[in-house]
Image (cartoon, rainbow, N blue to C red):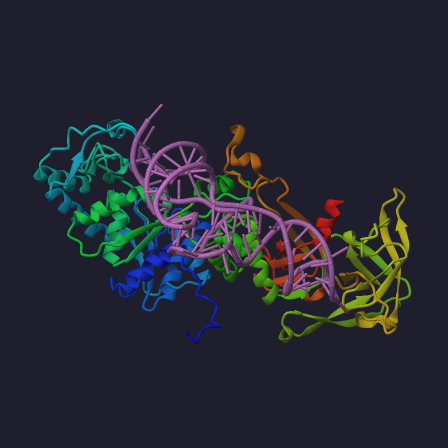
Length: 566
RNA sequence: UGUCCCGUGGUGUAGUGGUAGCACAGCGCUCUUUGACAGCGUUAGCCUAGGUUCAAAUCCUAGCGGGACAACCA
């Protein structure tokens, strides 16, 4: 009988962790070496975060494990060091540390060149003069075999010479490539004499003009993994068909380390797109204000929106790792966010859509300081004071002239509690000459200071408020999902993702009324505006003493649901 | 008319021949100085058909469905 019977059962491992655990217990490896291998050609997004959490998570949770950050920078026409900096920032913001293990595939170019020569000498690679179109033509189709290149049988000596002259810049872009000699009849297209090197007379962001030939992904990636001693090379499902080539390259070269490639499903999220191409369209065509627009699923966008690293890590843990295509409900991400913010963030009061309330029996010009709790989840967060005055703002939605029975807020003759303040009763509704409500006249009960009635009477509703005299006015942006459909990638009836863009994904409130302490918020600082949602002082547009707030997400709202049901 | 991968509640997942579990979402209730949080309850699932077995989500076969693959991209 085990004595640990009150232990909760061990958390089950996903299939990748299971493979690694087995490799460790079998003694195949002492500790795992993984890598996150972005191409520096764009900003990383929540889908990359899944991969980052997997790869770095694996190194963190195994003794002696390491995870490399390696840039797959083999295509100079698309890449830029601007992207390497942003990716480094994002990975470390997410909470991961690559230590000394920062690498670039471009650092291996010389070694890769030597290995290519080795392949040529073995008669396993050749220089091909076919044009781009001819190569495509010779490749065949998934259902029919390809044809051999007429240059396939060049001698190793000729190939060595030609390859060197390619390197020396003697040939024009596109005039020659180096190809592996495998099998033009293979059912796997990637094995039909794949291109290994192409000529690109383009300046590389790191190697400058030193090279004019650049290795392809399939040649570079496996060898970079091997050079770095990676044990498990984790990638997304679309690379599954590349695995035979990954293994072929390593098996046909004199390298001692042969990592195991394992594929998992990439993340898909409802109400957004996660392809670099589509994200780029959103940015370039001005649908958003840049890669870090708070509506973007990029790590920089999420950061500006107010997501926390912990919430993203928690989400990545919750979704798991599998091999089947899925579409994860963004509600899961939001849940992870609220869970984190609810525990950690201080509360404040803010009125977004104000209506003025005059407390007729409160002395004119008087300001009273009331104490408010900063975080009911965390007593150590302490309290603050809020100024209370004769004129205050409350939320438009918190008043109804003709309220239904289930409406707990303010209405003519009704009494509610002002959060941390007093009970007030609505005595009079003031309208302008077109019949719009402009002001409410209420009376307060001085006995209820702090929010409790000595006579024990209860009120059903508590609403938030801000002193009109002392309000801090600033810009608040309310963000909503970027697309109106849960799967904007689905191209039904000739529609593209652009046709599903949510026209009202951004509402700007120019002068919201916030409690005064909020004027001191630091950029990046998050708060819960009670009863409204979580808000974050914008990293870019905030000025000292005048932060601009972004709504990160709303609170769950049972009343809104009830209202919609009716 | 190819090859490969994959099918568990609405969604994301667990299960490794022996009671289908968790989370999110939904619904209902309780609590509440946030209609939040929290707590409780509840709806709902093994793609189909055969086979092996005392016993199948799990093993086998076939079908059906989804996905990937024909950049000198990664």
